[in-house]
Length: 183
Image 1: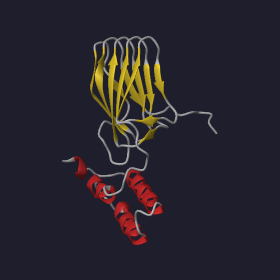
Image 2 (image 1 turned 180 degrees about the vertical axis):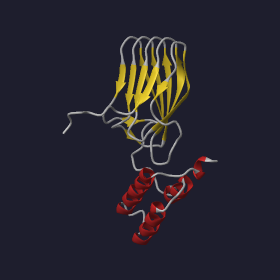
Image 3 (image 1 turned 90 degrees about the vertical axis):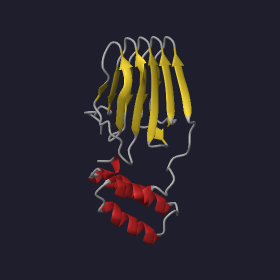
């Protein structure tokens, strides 16, 4: 079964309807086009059905550089909060750890490639709720990568592809931790 034939969830339909409504407010769709596409989105059964409704719409975010290289020898590398994510991140760290928090980041494309080159440090990647990551291309001599998120790409959500290696460190991919006392 191909990816486009897989069944969608209510969350997938909701993300698509929000994108359609945003395109309407920008003047990219007429009222009639919006109504037609919303009806199809709310009754869509497969990813192929949803993708056909948004393929002619541009990405919602401004563009950023395609490739950014981050490097540290002794210190830790951390990106979090509101930061612009490139299409490809090349991260190398000899002794420090790496933390890439995508939960509040500006991501302008559906797939982000993260290439890790770690000697003694570990990496932690935090995805926004619903995001997914494929860690099959990451190898460690010390431990296996640990991922608590789905690995298959889905339309409308961030998909991170992690490649590279670590000699003594590991890799963890997860969603943000829930805060118990947040108001």
